[in-house]
Length: 108
Image 1 (cartoon, rainbow, N blue to C red):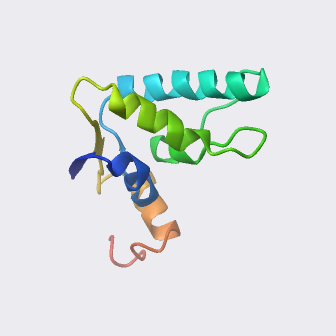
Image 2: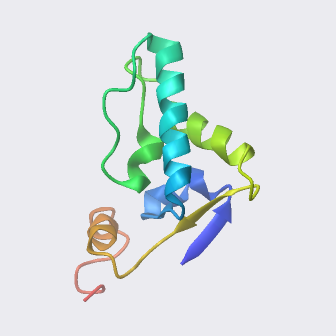
């Protein structure tokens, strides 16, 4: 399942991931830049899953993940970030079950 436009601010909540690895790399770099600007320190770790990236907060509690995503989306060559949801991926399916979007029986 593919989606684009302003979804990067909502779709990660439903397990969508960045379709292109370069987009995640660009957002990681922007997150690090924003974190350094606010705290003077580099970002210590990145979330393990693409869909977790928008939840990153600075040590002061500011939600810099959404700001970084918006910045990269605005300057993206496609005019928007593309997201994908792979319903065959076990990590994505577990995430959807944890979020209460599917139950275990529905995804078997």
